Length: 306
Image (tube, rainbow, N blue to C red; front, side, top):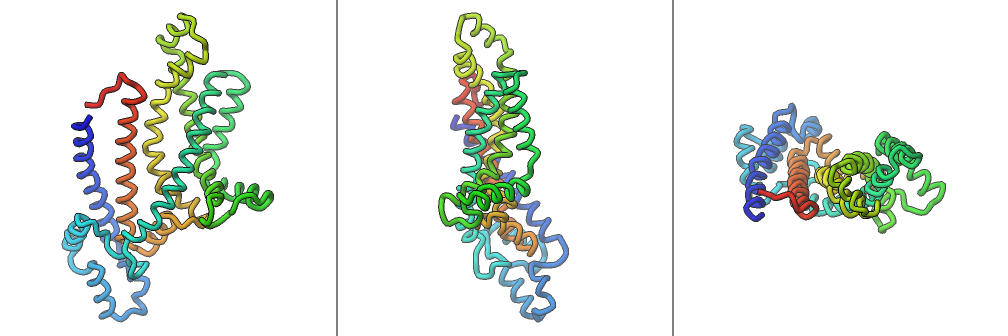
């Protein structure tokens, strides 16, 4: 186990190196500079001083080497849009909010999606199965930018129970968490149904039934442990996506997470903030994929990491 963890962590280093390299050169080789929007009002001398201060002057390969050295020290540099604020400071303020929102959405997705999938599989071909699949299809087909206004209209205006904007109280998390979690719950429900149906037709399940075990024991004690494995695989990248927040959801509900900052960084060519957000997402994706692999060994004892 320890050797597997060390090997995976070592393999993450070249992956992160490629992510940083591609992100940096894509942004730096595009036309203009982070101050191009102000080029008409900033004198050329002041512009040169700004580029020197933010270390974006000189040949691109030199800028890249200096940037790598700063990253090795844990310095993500200053934001070129939010002057006098470092990328480290911005991420430290916004990442916990996005992660809290994402964790709530992931919890909703699992608590709704897994039971729905199990109900659909255990009532295969019946009205309950058809109704559950219809709900899942609607959930997957409804985009966040449509679901968010519907939730605001229903529970924020018509029946004003939850706040529709801001991040002032735990209740303010309910609507954006539902907006993030419901589409994911629909996808998990469909995946759970398909996986459980496949497992229920396996030989070891037929053997368990032949021994006289009740259907509940067959499903929940034997079949579910195997059928849950595809859900674990799906939840690895899903968790990374949800825990870094949703750009659309955070923008609609005015949540001060990473989403709005990332949008503004792209629009304003804030190279270092873009790099910090992409690097954070990549780290979380690697971390949760690793956690997913470790969970396999706890859920299914037949799996060994080597």
